[in-house]
Amino acid sequence: MRRPFLALLLLALFAHPAAAAAVGERHLVAYESAATLRDSAHRDTVRVTVWYQAASDAVERPLTIGPFFRAALAAPDAAFADARRRAVILLSHGFGGTARIMAWFGTALARHGYVVIAVDHPGNNAIDPMTVGGAVMFWERPKDLAAALAAVEANPVIAPHLDPHRLGVAGFSAGGFTSLTASGARVDLKRFLAFCAAHPDDGVCAPQKEFAVTQAEVDRFVAQPAIAQAVAHAGDDRAIPGVSAVYVMAPSLIQSLDPASLHRLHLPVGIILGDADRVAPPATNGEVAAAAIPGARLRILPGVGHYDFLAECTPAGDAAFARCRTRVPRAGTHAAAIHDALALFDAALGGP
Image (cartoon, rainbow, N blue to C red; front, side):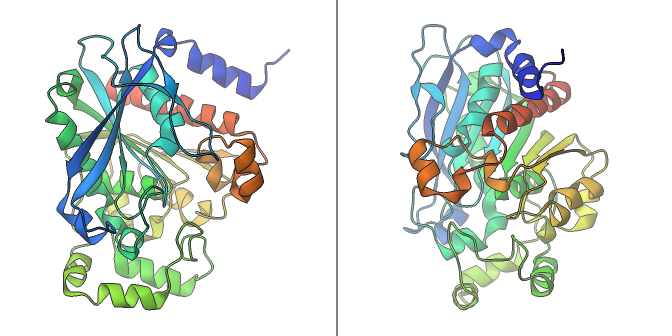
């Protein structure tokens, strides 16, 4: 008798010996000048979370991500498992998310042996007040990842465990856009504005549930001299040197990317999405990226929606948010993403 698809995925994922390893979590602060234009308090800081394989005596605890989501496990400030240098994965959350809302993914990669560096994007996360700058200036997100990487590389405790020559990047939704721009894709704001003018009801162009911004608010914001200058440089190169592989989940904002720059991405790219996604419709996002990027691997999950790539919800979350209720169990969606990401990064980076 054939085993169910989810069972096969789980067996493949947890068959690796490293799956039994504990995960450690550490927190740092990075500095990024563009954060001042997005953060509600105009701070130039970016919160950084690092997950890694921890020593065998580490005691894991549930990570706090509020009453509506089930937390992954990690051991605060635990010692590293060993002295080996390990491949690094930069991780970007979606619009209005947090690093920990993606801990189901980040801790799984860390348990496998990668060092995962995640951020809370300024002005666009669920911890701080959301801002117009955080919502509009999405092209600045790759700088947050670059700043986080620099901060971790300068940390005397973590830096000796990094292999800077083996670097990957991953992200969900707007974090998928961030991952592609961090890998060399270039922003074309005029293209995005033209697309939204022609398709105002597209899920990416419509007001976002997490933080709806009106056109009048956007106009007032971009009229500021400092913002106008930043807008003029939106199409600058945001690539992070050394990125060798990319994995994106339900990517959004793909219409803001120059198709020619996507075609120039000659590195392994994996894309996973659900065919029931109405927030970042595949036909105008993930499928467009897959068609433009040479050799990109696209996987479409039947019945899976956009928010299925967030953490598992608690009963309180199921009751409070429609986005918590899914047609397909989240466990299967998560297992598919983790399985595919590990396969891509192991092949491209030589394993953790």
